[in-house]
Image 1 (cartoon, rainbow, N blue to C red):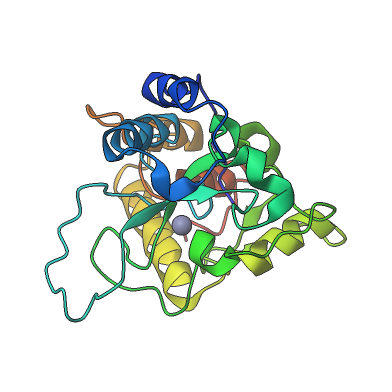
Image 2: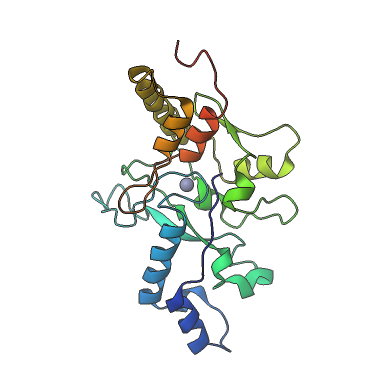
Length: 232
Ligand SMILES: [Zn+2]
């Protein structure tokens, strides 16, 4: 689970909320222009990555095959505390509760093998066991095997719960993470003079549009624990 570094609330959303103050909060009433502005800001906060799996989100993904992908979206606005749960109704338009999660498609257009991230979590939420999706909170709570599996320390009930409800060990998701790590290892083999730290910093660079690379949290985590067998 990657998490997000939240910034200021979207200006357009704050203005819209002010103009609609006193009304019952209903998500579907949100103006589409305001929603687009919100997506823009959430995308920037998350450097273009899904708040949960850390895969790249393309907010302009063309659905090239509408029949195959009917009902599937590349991303959605995720309510961490579900909007259908009455006790969280007041958080429906709260910036701190809003994130971008991948939907039923990867940036490549491939589908995950099962529901993942926000689609998997859906209405599941246990206040006692959840882990806040904050970048600082999440880093250090999750580790990865080189085959792409995500895991946590034994007894870390919160991290275990999040891996389960987000389906972060989905087979396709694991294979994408494995392929990402293998490509990093290939690069390290070709450039033996560079240190792990240099590769980690290089992989952490965002592109000119502000997008980070998919699964950067995994690559940083794996590079933080030098394994002498990696390059053999
Ligand atoms: Zn995701």
